[in-house]
Image 1 (tube, rainbow, N blue to C red):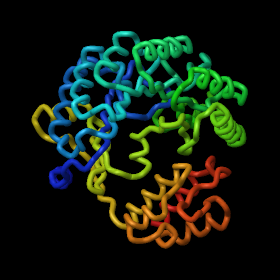
Image 2: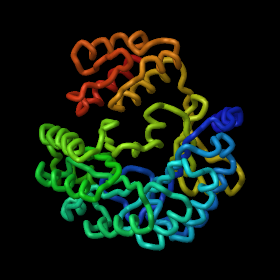
Image 3: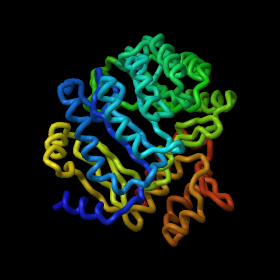
Image 4: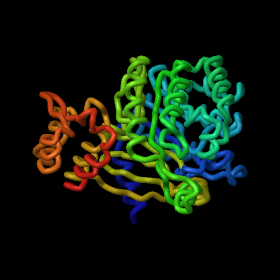
Length: 391
């Protein structure tokens, strides 16, 4: 019944979604901190997966605007697919793109070679999100990454040489054993590469990961909050001094290089997700494909939609989620847009939590926006959780 409900709702929406996400659930090796859905023992299933992802897109692609504003291929590690399979997948996705589409593929530096880079560019990929995480070999070992600092530099050289003009680097801070000086070196090295975009996140210890097990067994110690805070604000100061604008709590970009795809999420606008564990948000309804590759393959091969969990966001739940996401943007929530969408202003909808944080200074209200104060970026999760609790 739940699956039919999702399908029925989907069939009532026509070309209303501007963003497409495709989840590739394969990795060379799982990183020690990662709890995203992927597997390393499914090599024989890669060909079936590519055919299934294309099949799911044919089942659901009628909701996509033509052309899409953004396409994002994530994982997992999309570039762990062999070049011929990656080529097959990207060629089909390219049909939904034009010259204005932001077309991103995530990559691990250890999986980039000239053949893979040529496949990306040939199929219209104009943005690569490179999972660097650190330029320190010891820290990469703590994280369980498969690449070396040298491979990161080589990947950057290959991608630039192939013609990729928009590269985003992912970094992690708060890694066990990492000092402020080590973090500063990572930032300097990343920015020396003239990256167009930088995403930087504090390490989180997720249950059922090897790094969580190490934490529980006292084999590693988390970086304390005071040092993490220093790292975070050093990140803000350093990126600003090097010409990158902070536009979201953890994201920084040169002029014109903000990630269009992620902004879709932060504005709580619609998107289509394809692949096991991929999420969609269509017509106010959020659905998430089951994180089960075998079930996914069997269902698509039988011509049926993948099994999905669904949730309808209406009223205060949709308002709360919209506020929570938009407050991650440094400009915050545009009051007029929120009021037009929900027929009530943010302060009227959530007077208790917003009122308290406006009074404390954690939130700032201008004539046009409500936003987090810069001093409270580091503790934003507490503010956002309180707003959601008022739902």
